Image (cartoon, rainbow, N blue to C red):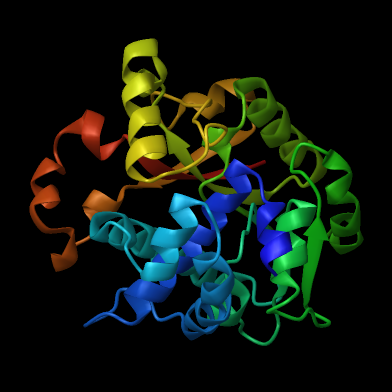
Length: 286
């Protein structure tokens, strides 16, 4: 296991941080998210992480993760689970594709007994995930970069069924052209599907502000240098300009949640640049 963790690149390693946030929140008082599988995986990973030279891995092994980050990630996971449950109420045998799934255990949280679920991530992440989670006849792994669009081939067998594509904590690490090409590819290959994706405000990508973001990620969170944000939009309707058949449905920010654990940050709900530093948008790809 230690060798597999060494193989993870800077961006892939962020999936471990997300997993630990789920586990820590699940064990807290009045948890936002109930994710027992995440707790099990973290317990098994801790010995390998504690032996690592990585500051990030050591902090995770010690459970020393910023509480604000834990709350943010847990609220986001809960909201994305709700998107899927709402989708499955209308399409019980729908197809869910979790792009950049990391070590998330979402299938086990939302399984209604009919859904077909695909977890897509880099081969090195899938290799780690297979240590802890097994596939079955409705739950499948796709080991591929999201930028290699051949990953869509297995999904074409389900044409005629309803698709929901999830991209939680993914697009901001890609370049703008790649995100645009991917979304347009999904729109052309799976018309009528829905896309729920997390986006970053492009105003923070200007040089002085991006330096601040990189400093926080690399020096406070101890992420690697490659884990930097590259893609952003200014407005939730911006993607509609890419194709007339892309339809904006709704947006969500974790500031919108009436969750006591957000604390004093809730007072920034009406400060648009903060509310929409990093938020989620739902589209229909007609």
